[in-house]
Image (cartoon, rainbow, N blue to C red; front, top):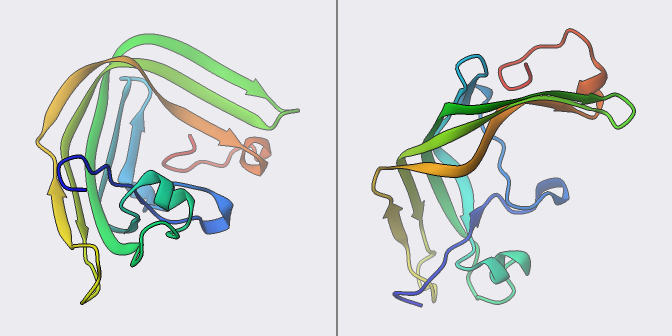
Length: 160
């Protein structure tokens, strides 16, 4: 796999939802007025499945997976391109307020995975180089869905 390996890091399948992890609410900051958003977290527990097909098969394709791993991430979005506005449909149970932005900055991304002693897969650490780029399409916003869309007056860091 060396040289061409594509890794798959995620939290497994809690409650049947793929490729997600729960992070602290204060990890996400959204300022719709200025069209900015940020996502920062450190050492959040994930699983390293080695490949996407292995992740989807719950580790049946590669013996010794998933590996316990941790992930740190630092991403910022900025540059208002267009205010897409507020959309709401109580019957469908959602409301959102969206802004299209033009730039994404990844200040740091690190994953550390630890193989068990004697495992056929290896431990590793991956750290990306900082990068900024213009995006052909990125949207930041606030969304409420399900019961949160129907609860008037409820406010939270990521829920408006």
